Image (cartoon, rainbow, N blue to C red):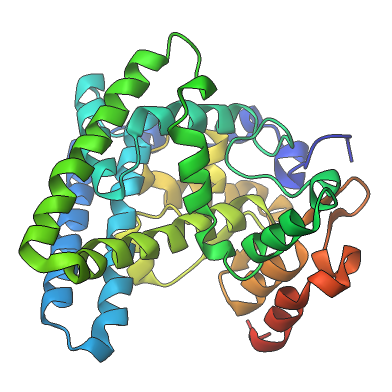
Length: 337
């Protein structure tokens, strides 16, 4: 393996241009009907989720939060398409829709777009990919306190690690080029306006508990999917994964990820057709996995510290005394597919 790089075997063996020749033009065509249908699905499912939260007895609230968090993940996918210019033919429309779609997530659209473009340009480059990379051994061994924080972060609370990524990468103006700062400031102003107006209104109408119920818990549900999609797409050798039809509909097929890294111009509603084309033409090179407990257990208990020879070394191999959370995960997480 090349030093300083976590290589994706599939993309290494098959450069994107080789796969693109098998993609018909229709995969890249923007369909206004399908694009706005995805908006309708997300808005309707999110509204239904809020209604369920308002009516559900306490013991059914986790189900309502799970639905609503999954539904609002669809908002992110819509903004994601806008950022890749695969939602509408008008860039202003994409900027407006992308900004609005990200607001309930308090995600600043332009900062995310700039960093996400870098992720596509530097996918799986250890020090340059802005989406995800494993722990550096030097960082892991730098201090006992940091080591324990890393173990918990990359272990038990890994399905919510995207919260840290959201906070670290998108609000610091120093992380952006001078020609990007103006648009970044506009996005930040929109997010802070939403927080300054929307949150007080929720609290005024429903109190602090209402804010926790109607906003925070669905937001944590969204970050579960955000973290899960990211680590599964970019951590294990298995690039694409499959899940239930309900999740695919609410999340607009973002779980089908290989075609998106071949060309980010493919709209989300064409990802499955593009993936089928890859299967038909390059299936023997393709690594796939069903999203299940075994896959998540492998990622959360093994894929930790970068190692040039073995790709990853687990925390409990380097620091067994500090890795009790990882040992616990190995015991309690199911091992079935």
